[in-house]
Length: 318
Image 1 (tube, rainbow, N blue to C red):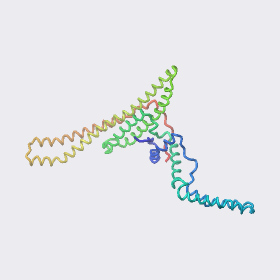
Image 2 (tube, rainbow, N blue to C red):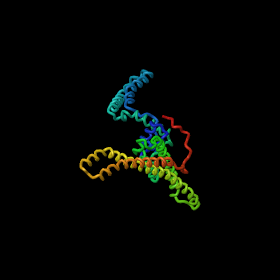
Image 3 (tube, rainbow, N blue to C red):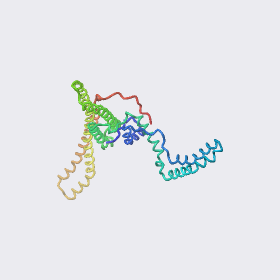
């Protein structure tokens, strides 16, 4: 199961970035935000060590010259020690973080901005409760069964439609499950505190609403599983047809062998049945594919009670 499920309307480049951002998403769930300032790098330290003393001397020169000599004497030793220490620490890497810290800082800020921008158009699997995760796993297995089948990759199914419909189904199921999980967790937390008789009466229809929503999402998943089952039947018919075609291609060799060994005519008749079997398998394959396509046309149940109007986001940000 993918760790992050992304709305198929998100541009591909951004979608890839979101799918690779599980670690940052988990940190964000715990309240993390990127630093507002860039960390002090080795280059910054060396620059301070080089130009800091010059700036200090310039400041002193602007003051009374009578006190300049004594002031410089007082600052010379500690300043020199500080400069040497800073340079050594910077060069040995003891003061600053890795050289690419600045790049990492920018990447984190960009990723954080992307995650905030696309909020509501991705779901972290950890956001789902156990029941929702099980349903999502079933849906994803059904989708993989369809998309990985040879009848789909060979174009015997409506592969173009599948490429659009199946990701949309996965996202809609995931979105509904995330919403259902959120409401269900809060619902259970309230019940676990103990309810007054009045509250118990009020909670019954709410619990029923959650059950109905669960059943509606389950209906979507079962529709996908029915489609996957019909595709599996078509896949078996396709595989059988390929195998029989392969055997039929070698039929002249078998017939020649039977003739040369003077085998009885019964063996010849049995071999010739391969041609008939291949035709029957071809018809079975067509029926299986048609059946799968018919199921696909009806594999989108009515939205559950948790379905809400989508926002006006257009998904055009790259």
